[in-house]
Length: 300
Figure 1 (tube, helix red, strand yellow):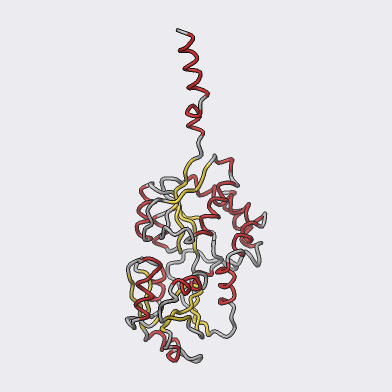
Figure 2: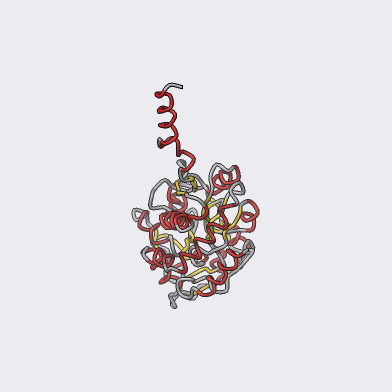
């Protein structure tokens, strides 16, 4: 063989192309919106979990190029085209996908305040009864687990298809097609800022509360990710990063304020879709129970 040929082969071996198999694995996550602000906290956490677990292999988190409603996200995970999504849990969802049962939002997704028409606060006095509220018409996303929760508890509620930043729901409230739109306390502040041009407001007196946890869900085609994410969550909880990531978001701090307002009347609802509840999911306040839980998951 000519010396040139040997040099050429050597160049192939030591060139970057020769290390192609060492490139980090792309962990594709799905999302509802292309806007980088959407799911920023979740995407940050996912990226950090991968960084903190190098023993599972080099990996980087990347968004799926196409935003989509939750039903389609599930399809992408089931096919293996994507690896991870985040969503409020339900029994049906846990049957379809692999579940990382850790409440990323500390259970605050189950604290619901109402978005109502700006001039209809009078329909919601401080002494309003649950029976009266059940006579009003609410709206939720057609494929959200919360729709089932509200119907199970005797509330009149319609499901609307997904739209950009839930514009359909806010328009329905503004035009009087529905009476209210229950939003979780974490998302409602940002929502109202985005829809400041509409005649809607945050209702002053009520809070609906039910067990609801937002989890990472993993594709059945990529089961190795489940233990990796549990391991990373334990490390982030132990080193304080998880609390730091949560607390630095204004909407998270605002959510804790809304959830603990003693001026609101609270209606407690059942969630028939929950397969597991946590006695104390507020890991930023009291991390010990969730730390013990994560240790048990990692040891499995």
